[in-house]
Image (cartoon, rainbow, N blue to C red; front, side, top):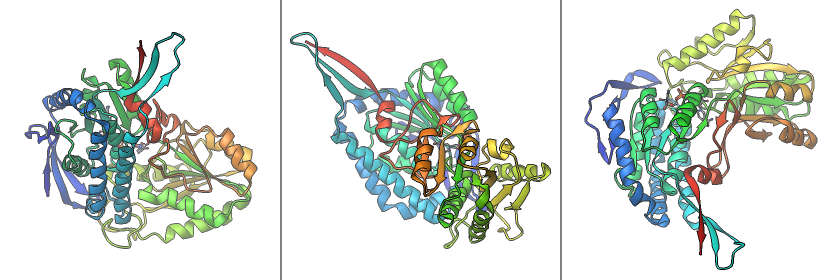
Length: 477
Ligand code: NAD
């Protein structure tokens, strides 16, 4: 069992704050680690360390900074099995998904390592003879990163890699649910040659996050998590003059039109609803299906849900692991109870007798017979629960898909090009999939949502450069 503390200027802090247990969600009796919360003074020192290292890191040649990320990508690639196993033990996603997530973190680091070879500014014509006007992308400054538990290494990598590549020092507050993976990623970066104090890690919850945002050294904050907390972070960022972005929650919809390939749609809806036990911001939470094909599609979906092997995330063959925390499991149970009491037709209740007898398990659940304004259609459940509503036609389906307050990702299943193009034109969403599941993100492609799902700009790809740098305009005569 590991004993973990925050990391300030390359050193673990001396334990002084409250102590917490980090449990294996497949076997809660197994304590994966104990960890100490950062004290106020730890957070202050972490911000000071980031401020003190800011000048030397930003003036380190871009290719040297990129070299650290390239080496980190190699180390992560060599350790996918080892780190993937730790991830699955700590967070609960099946081993194949845990290993896949570490491999993804490696690809993200490799992508941003290559940024050193791309232009870092532009030259403009001047109306005055003898003058040159240029812009340079310069580091924004010490940056706070606040991350959730559901992708404990990939989401931190997609913030850390660009923040560091573009020359920023960092204070990172990972989720209190997944401190082991956080410190593993920090260890890999240190081993790859990241100087002490360029990355500082403070362990803890919301108080630690708020303290970070209030520190005068912090210039920017990138947050991923729930909408309620994201709004609080955006507010604190505005109050303290911190450039802030927030990727937040989602109730993502799969729209299946009458002409869709039903087997493909069933495969992708079930994968989207149950991957990582439904705990992805991009998970498929709603199915809006043309009423003429509802029964045949649901039959296929139920059959695929029944195929899942539910069990310990580390056991070979498991396809659906536990929820990450008991609070997650209780939230899903409450949503299903509410569905029953409001007269919904719960055609598959995931709280079945055949679940493992320990661990925070709930199997796939499917609910229909509800109106589009039922809380299951409007509020994020963050678990393997699919709310189904029928649609009269394409227009009704698209109107239902857009009716809620979220706008992260939507899938449309159709063989008709006109319907696909109408979806691309009309749906108010950050990411649209046509004939693929609602989940997934590529490191070189912008990622993010609109409305209650995102604020302050996209992440990844070139969008990350916009966030982690400022444009400096220079008139040269
Ligand atoms: P959360 O909002 O509870 O916590 C996210 C992070 O914010 C954690 O590190 C937490 O400790 C910190 N935090 C909590 N209160 C804070 C405060 N007042 N000030 C500053 N920081 C604070 O989310 P979670 O339970 O860790 O993750 C699940 C949520 O994340 C879901 O809503 C999911 O949709 C969302 N999510 C969104 C994306 C995306 O890209 N849109 C990706 C993954 C997860």
